[in-house]
Length: 434
Ligand code: PHE
View 1 (cartoon, helix red, strand yellow):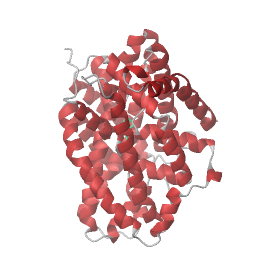
View 2 (spheres, protein in one colour; view 1 turned 60 degrees about the vertical axis):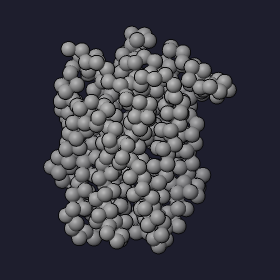
View 3 (cartoon, rainbow, N blue to C red; view 1 turned 120 degrees about the vertical axis):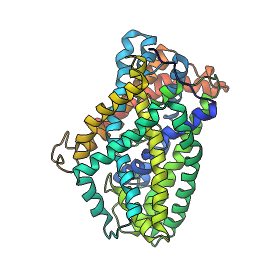
View 4 (cartoon, helix red, strand yellow; view 1 turned 180 degrees about the vertical axis):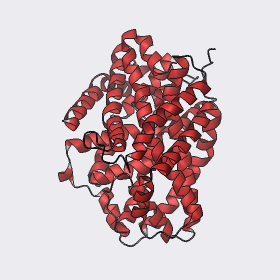
């Protein structure tokens, strides 16, 4: 039976869902750790430059293609030209690969919520983090629980599940973050963290840093795997795409900056290493909480809200393959959710085990987890964004004038979409992967 396409109740609910998709683990977990591995302030400078200039264009284009074609990714590209179908298929594949590591990190949050309740006396959080991620069973089970929660929300349909989390929980999350920032910047030696974040050393600039910054910018804005395109295809009304794109970029950047200002001062204050990788936030935050009055309660509140942010993003990641299964394979939404649960689990379990028993299994010298993160953010997402710009600019011939009132901005958009952004993406992919 053919299911009716879902749609947003209002423009506001669409914007909230798109912001909910953007703001998630990418801001709080991935941004500080990638920045820590890439020299701090110099990475931030490149990242902000990319976010404020070129990322607007693919974000806008995804929204527009979704809105114009009213189809999920594969159908959207196919409706332009059947030969383009392959480029559409890459999007849900990227989504499945992203899910396979994103849901593991979501599982860590659930673990930390329990930790807040049990409140054991832990003196070394780095050791705690490596012990629990090494433990095959719990690392897998928590990831599968997180995946189950997102799938459950998705199975209930896009509106009911996401709107509550976005309307009420995100503003509350911002309030907690501000409280933690105030605490963090008042710790001893906090100024070293602020310097690390805002005093760039441009001698550290290199091509890999540019590619990492681009990967992070695309990842955090949810561009380059069809999530925004799919959400855009559920919009009913005709106006406001440019405003939506700005809102997504600004809110997402604010959350990332807040996460940085919360984490880096604390890292320096507690004598931790900023370049310690994926566990960075999960090691630093418990130290902050352990030093705070009522830290156990703040910790539970923080991780519950982070979980809500991660769920709204997780839902948007799986929405891409779900929409493809529902609209292309004519699955019911429930059946699509069940099938996807098994597919993602099959990839997520080896990735979860790569912290422990599969740690020696390397692909391009990376563990399965790191490889999935790298291949999606630094390769597939830029590639998908490139194909999107080319298809939107040259095949669908989207013009800025359709959506933007200002003629100069509209003309700049057209040039950016057809020439500048594709050239930059090709260049960054080329030099970064060389
Ligand atoms: N932007 C999300 C985050 O920052 C992750 C995401 C990536 C969501 C790609 C959808 C698509 O956590």
